[in-house]
Image (cartoon, rainbow, N blue to C red; front, side, top):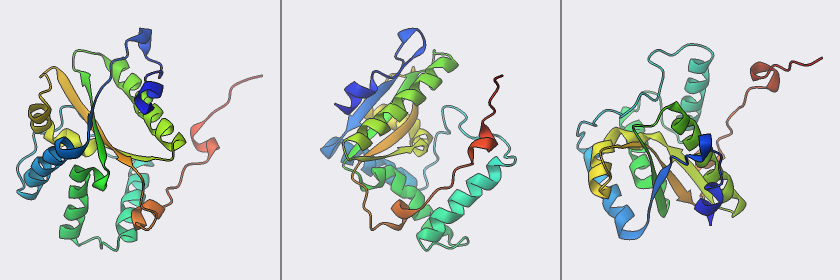
Length: 196
């Protein structure tokens, strides 16, 4: 139902370039076990298949990013110098944050930039449809680090770029990270209106 609704997301010339692997039960657990092992053993990631973040941060984006990161770790009681607990928290990505359903999203690497824009609309549509049904999601770029392992485990073709994952389930309202309030910039900081 969620994916069917999200499939109505617009895409350039109706290309619908997204692909999603939905994982639950032993398949989800098997992938999580392999990913957590790779992370815990500090196996080298394969490097992302694409560049997600800027090569060099600049303002105001650096400040926003830091504020979110500091706020998250502060809410969890993890100090800035507590590298081990920060690492453990990062590793929870590979468990889909304990959600019962995980999704891995890919696009064919032969597509242009339009496919990335279209995939963003598809991801947002999934998140909105899930909320409409009382569910919660968390998009997770961290999975791209182990794209080769994921590709092998799910038998994905080499032409597919592992873009991100997403956790799907019910948020635990008692978890501090789920109570974190993220600030948004006021309208006049990102929008300009031009009319006469």
